Image 1 (cartoon, rainbow, N blue to C red):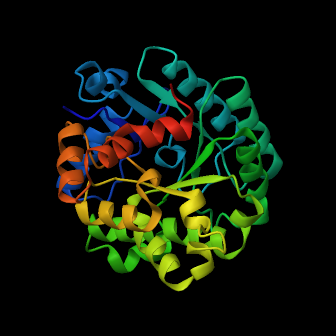
Image 2 (cartoon, rainbow, N blue to C red; image 1 turned 90 degrees about the vertical axis):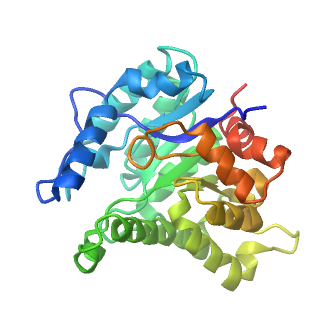
Image 3 (spheres, rainbow, N blue to C red; image 1 turned 30 degrees about the vertical axis):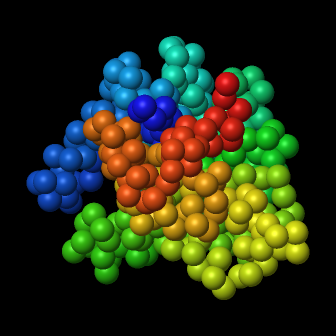
Length: 312
């Protein structure tokens, strides 16, 4: 029987914004990003795999880093408008579930917008950038957002951004180098949350990272015994950290299940940036190659996301 799949990692950019296409790309990369820019604002494309039956749902976020000016902090009104738009999208038809976007480094103002987005708009989680300048998510400015998410009972999806300080040396590797650099900062913010004690301060907070952060998760599990296993047998990694399956690489899925447990791995594609084709067959094949049985695969495909977001 085919798996019911909910894609936890799907992007959408509402009008009037559009995804930026960098000017210094190779012709191949330029064409790829032009296609991404076209798809990421297309409601019909976002729904296509739901309507075809390939997916039973998508969890949609608005990635402001893809359209606001690089190096500039978005105006707070941008997040309010983005949250209004993604809430309207989720209400437009079955299968679409929206999470809020906020600037996690904007202190109490971000926390207030998150409360509005959840209590008034019905959004089911929050999407934040992993870093801002030299700040990671253990920064004091981020605590109000993390505290609000804890009190609201919603997960925080910590998403990587392009780390310009790493890219110069990796410029000759435009795809693998960029993914590696983004993953390093995604992992760095998770490590900061663990090592600073922020997750211990907020023990019911749930954090989701991308599969690019697996390296950081493995290092914490290997070198920080307290993070992996407290006296009660469960440290913050297994209690509070979840990872999605972007890229559908069996080795990474296996590592995530081994370290975090089968209840903490979520199907996610990074649509339309990494994956814009049928998702369910790729995920099912990857789960089988990773050695997951039918019950484990069903959890990863949709069960864990339903539980995390409180979906029926």
